[in-house]
Length: 311
Picture 1 (cartoon, one colour):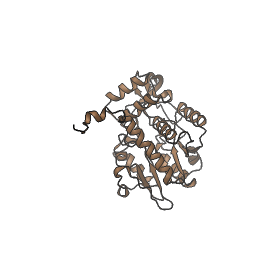
Picture 2 (cartoon, rainbow, N blue to C red):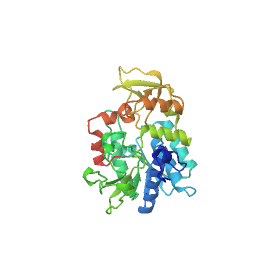
Picture 3 (cartoon, rainbow, N blue to C red):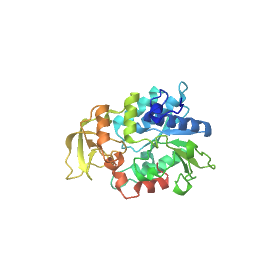
Picture 4 (cartoon, one colour):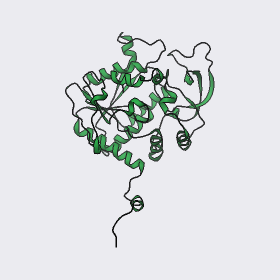
């Protein structure tokens, strides 16, 4: 009798991993690899969905022990209040240490200047790189995914940054068979992306499977917004709306959250996880392509910022 196992039989095996199981396993492996290779890792945590999923994976990776990393957030001063509240509640619930680097502090000291358009996302680079240097973090976890934007698609899971936190695509290292090279010189550090191979749909399906709580901003709600550059923006102290930009109440939700001045809402009636997943599955635009004005400044906007030290 033949002992050959067919492909179908293999997939039916109780030991076969589902797509989400495989992604989870890869991310858990990355967290544990960093814990073994580096001295002072930190997780970027904003209270947004990708950083929430990343923290959930870190909690799984080291349970029942506590997460052996601190958290870091670069606060633009124009973040959504409900997201910041969720961030703080999460940090308190898990008894984590959170470092906050504030863009406003750098503006007040004269190290940075406010942009005419009020957008502060491009101003995050200096506070981020100085926080990494001052706290001597040698590995920094980020929630970037390759499906988000073409510059992020170029980056490895372990992304080497030089002593100025700058990214050089020519210094990217091969990562065959999930072997990651964390070697770096004094002053350099490595940016680590456990969600690199995930898609937006994967993230939402995992959130649903794991029953992960999110800020309500990700679900459809009535909100006062105005239109600029084809996006629905929330009014705020950052400079919106201008004359000729009427405010109206619409049923919207956010696919991604960041600086209020450049993060747009989308028209949506998706009030549940299942509805959001159905909406994302039908979308033909990435979340950043559809709702982030800062990525539309030029064809190479994200890549230029990454070369300067941004995520």
